[in-house]
Image (cartoon, rainbow, N blue to C red; front, side, top):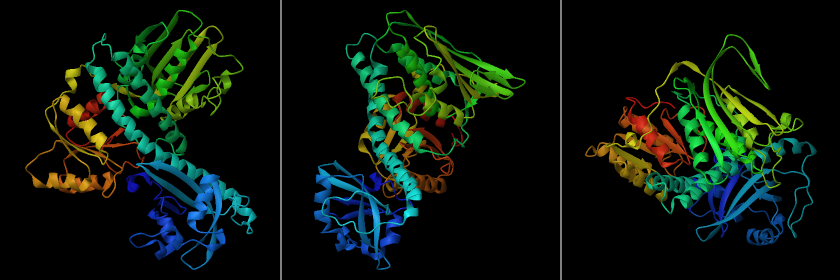
Length: 511
């Protein structure tokens, strides 16, 4: 267990504590340190140091009651640094890991009517005007916790996807394990999709950073190839890619997620024994004036259009206007209903639009428009040998399973690989001078020295060093690292392609 990694609430505006089963405070964020002062300092501070007897027993007794009847929030009274006893609405998350029991305790201003476990007095009520602001804080708190959990989730998925995609690249089409490997990859990608949806919907800001111009054909072809090779419905595929496609600035992971959602819907729409047809097309669009495509109004300018058309069951006229609404779905009740809402959010955050035309029995056409630049970027041939290299790669990550995965993939493609599990060890290797690394691949979220701090130290030590950052979090919009970026989870091909891209640039790109 690494409390430095799993406790992702350091920047929260409300106090938050990470406790073990013995009620020892392993981590307190800045807001908690400010609220409770020196009571949480020392080698092994415990919750009892700030506990008020008005809670109706000891912390141990309280958690015993809470485990028997857990509630999302409950009122607690704690002693703050000014000596006063303050009432908080506590949001408690308990989980088991590495054979231990752990608790994340988040302390919000008290809300009237918060549930209280049996045996805990509830005679005080909060101010009636506190509810509105606190509800927003509680939502922010839940979203922050979801992002934290998805970080560990993405680390595990990165290892699964990396190893699986490497094996798939070596398995012949008739290999007896190929089908099972594809199912593992598909399941891992679906799990990654869930984590990514949580992250995407937890972010309020637009995609303000500017990526390097790229050729969208590679992403479109990769998405189509995944569904074309998947077992299931008999579908005839027609992929038509514009040879000289305009350059688009886009977040590769996000756009791939959006296109995958549209393709997933197209495949699901083909049923009932009909012969399925799906056409995937890219084309350049130049508009000299405003234009309207169904629900999308486009201003004058240059665009790349990705059109995905199926001959499936189609969409009812009464349903079509609602397809982009969050949580609206015509699928089974257990479906989250975030698919096309997520597509809409991703595309509009890139400055584009999504037009959908459909009718019952005639199929559906979805057209994604992304702003483009009227110049061309040559496509990579995509051959496996293009991803080989002989350079030395230093990989930095505190998760050993990810170090093993990266070393396995990069070594298999000819690279010399060094792995370390901390930023300090990476600096020791780089400062010795006997080993020259060509690229440093580092995680951004690590205990002790963070990846961001490591990048800054490397810039001082070796200003021209090429650096590739990875993370399960969304890429921060401020681009403070000034380094290339790869979103977790990623496949072996994505890692190899990004390393190759970084090596091809004399200076570390901001993408």
